[in-house]
Length: 253
Image (tube, rainbow, N blue to C red):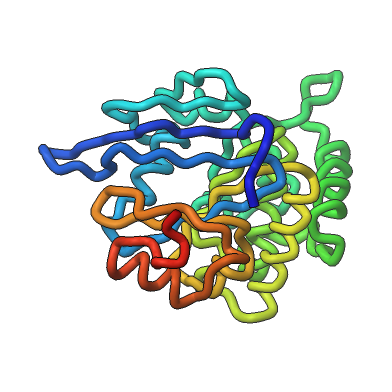
């Protein structure tokens, strides 16, 4: 599957070191609209560090980032947001005591003519975006602490999408979720793809990558082992890339 057109994101030749150790060593990856790219590797492989250069949490020592073909300057998370890059962390960063609408607009509240919060407008917008992402979501009036893991993911994703995310970074979105909840997140991801978003998925679980991703990029010791089309490989192929640090023979051109 050869991609054509301009990538949503291109990270070219990214390197970053901590205390003389190269955490990421000349790595290049890209992402296209409506695509999910999985990033795999052992702990310490460099996948999270690489993605933190895109989210603005770290600054690369070398290399360039392009968004929609234009060179991007990303020094902090605010810069990343200005390029419509949003991150959904495992911790989800939701305020447990607030409901879905209050979380969606936290820090970006809708204010009415008198300077008061327009709660009804915020709830209406929340219902609209969640109806698009997760039609079964019903719990608008309870604090998010009362929601299931999959429902909490729905709220976090809705917040990113409502504020115009085009590039979504998801850090192990199904970790600690049961089968039903995992399926809910899988359906959310399919919906986001249909809407043309690009998603980087940081994942440990190869089965999730095979199920959710279009391509998989494997890292080991800070280097990119390779990027493969998921429909052309098996679980064992990806596992051998993670462990051995090289592409399977059948994929070496």
